[in-house]
Length: 195
View (cartoon, rainbow, N blue to C red):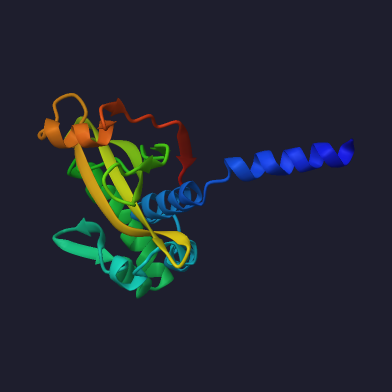
């Protein structure tokens, strides 16, 4: 009887495990935590490298901009510990003063269910954070698109979209992150970010 229960339990656990969701949770935690400089670049790479089809190209994408300078993963990796600490302090102070974001506010993000693409053999997961932009409550969305690569689902592309919650500048674009195929996108999971 105990063996039967264990077999049934193992079967149930396998059914609930979703490698696409696991990857999305890892990536969202890493991407949003690095944006706040809450994790080191070595930790970021350790988490993300195995989930990306082309990690080298992904690491060249801007993580954030500061005083007209864009920082990607490789730029941040070159900083020593003191430079990184100074950059983090300056990033938080500058973002707050310019009302571009309140990085202290972003302590967690919400994650959608896995969305099967109705036209292609891709899967998508959307992550939604909330922040204040120019004094207004805003959404920060990241849409991870997955493609099967060597029998594993890996991230092919990531799109980001930021807009005001109450009066979006591009309502049609915002709708793409709130609805898919006529159905409201639910965000049932929450990820706590590194501080």
